[in-house]
Image (cartoon, rainbow, N blue to C red; front, side, top):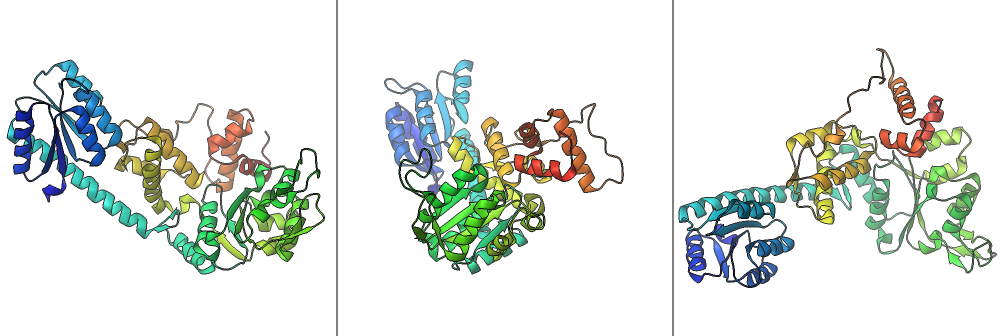
Length: 452
């Protein structure tokens, strides 16, 4: 079993490399040698060694510290042991600061080397086993870019597979940050349209006139700045899928145009006289209660029924807490690579902190929290200290007082009111503090009639 672990010995003294390599081979390891820092870097490029023994003083070219730094650029998880006959406190501190796992002094004792290597390999074996188990779990609970072990989410995955190849319109409901666009992409790529375009449009991000042009395109001269013909998102999605995010935010005029497209699969570009026909599957999403919007007269009933052919409600993260460890590890794996951080796991205390949080911003908030923690993390594992910003702050002297007997809505109203008071009516600051979108905060202010 030990032969699968490769070790590189780097020293300009041939006697030293031969003797150390012989000791390690007797212990059952596969060992290569290099006589210079440059040769060691070249070997590290070709093979990922479990452990590197690097002599501190090597004449010409790269010295031991420089060699270690170059190796760690190539292999961020490399275990480097610096060896030297000239031990000083300064060189030891420098070596450890630059990433050396151990610092030993010549002459090296075979028993000491064996115990040291055995300890490092034991840790690497555990890390490898954990990685294999983690990948098995991820594969078991993965569906495209979605990861979940929640029963309700499993039902959603099954329904997505069932309707993926149909042309029926799908309406995705759920709070902001629950992953509605990921579900939409899974719908698209699971079906027959998966090789065709997937085009996403945020309906809340554009003003009324701009949204019409974005969806349906425009002709040259149809408005100021229209210097040429432009295809809209519906044309660009022809044969594929268009994802209309935050559909509940579109105006009455755009609702009429959208209804016609859903009914007839054709439309006019802005300023155009020639009809454009398309074959597009529509997936819409909103965090709003569209049925309530219909009752209030803010959303067309006929459009609602056209959109609501297949309905999927994505549960918030607080209702599927069993997904938090899976998602958190998924974000650690991806973001640590993107940020260039050598972080591979999450401590038990940190995991408890993540599990205890309510995640009002859902999966998006969890991802942001992991990214923030990775930036400040000082070890290979996220700790509770790295996630300390998730701990509830101590109540201020003028903080919220909650008498007994309040309903959940009463508590929410008071908490929003106090947050607005603290931010002096600043909606963006209050929304950030509450972990919700500004549009959601506006809705709740209106719902609870909260003075700003």
